[in-house]
Image: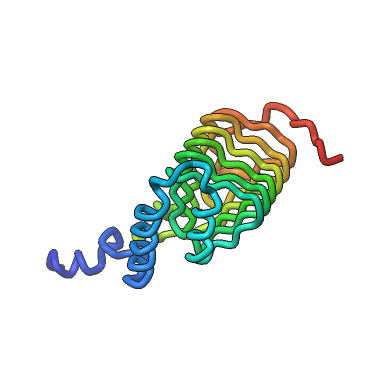
Length: 187
């Protein structure tokens, strides 16, 4: 087999997204950079208007900081009083849903996709990430594809989780482990 034939079959050289998807994301990045990235932090309402224009479903009284990054706003849902804090990155090809009062603190990273490294095709896998009401992903914490942070759960600063977090549980470390229960103030 020639090198050209190998290159055509090499999964590492194929693209996971269509040209249309890439153009849509490029337009989004330009608009965010020009109209939101350098706005004063308190102008959450303005950034939410722009996110909604690009298809995000956002509730009332939410906060989205100017130096945060949302990969695809059309795949983002935010319940009332939820927050995407400073320097948060939301990589959401499989969608991200934040329940009401959910918080992503500064520098948190939600990674909604991966690859199947056990196949020659290196298949791209998109998975939804959900933060249920009152869930809190603390500073510099990482949530991996397909995870649900159940109601009131906490992923402590710098924690990394690839597994669901139980309701009102507090998790620390890499990989994150359950350490204690958070007071359930909804009872």
